[in-house]
Structure formats: structure tokens, C-alpha cells
Amino acid sequence: MKKKVIIIVSFLGVIILLHSTPSMALRTHIFFMGYPKAAISSGIIEDKEHNEVDKDKFAELNAKAYALTNPPVEKATQGELRNYLVRKIGFLHFAEYLGDT
Image (tube, rainbow, N blue to C red; front, side, top):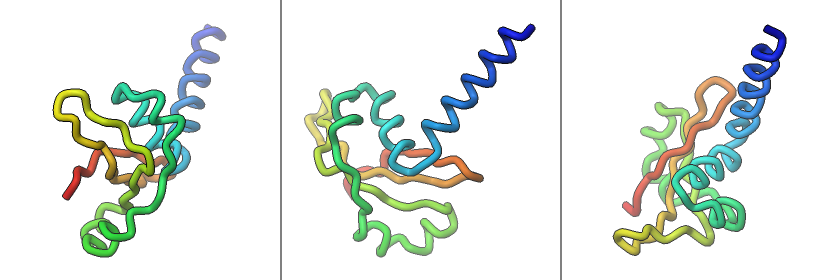
């Protein structure tokens, strides 16, 4: 019983750590998309253009747009995966691909 509790608490601790900040959530998302090198080496900047244009929509979602300085290239289309939306839910952050628009 003690082992199960320790495993569950450890697992929850890792999830909280990986989603505690916008940059960590974004790096975690990129890592699990299959681009571990980009997740570690790419810089993350706030995407001021998307944040300004979609200010009202992002305020409703409690989200901000971020861009990678050295984005991964998708294997199928050879497109750069540069822009991401990071939503804050409670005290955790969750990232999703925003697209090039």
C-alpha cells in the first residue's frame, strides 16, 4: 500500500513540475510530439503579434501565444512548428499547437 501511494504522489509531482510554467508546459508538449532535441534546445519567446491581434479571445481562454526561436520541422509537410498557445487552468499550464496563421 505504501509503495502505491509513493508512486502516485511521485507521478503527480512530475506532472505538476512539467506543467508549472508556460515554458515547461511548452517544452513538455514539444517533447511528447516527438521532437526532444527542439524541446531542449529551442528558445521560447512571447508571440506579441498573436497576443495583440487575438487579445480578447486569449483573455477568455486565459491563454498566451508563444513562439519557438528554433522550431522543429514537421516530417510530413516540412513546415515549421513555430507558434503555440499556452492556457492556464488553475495553477497548471497546458500547451497546444496554434498554427502559422
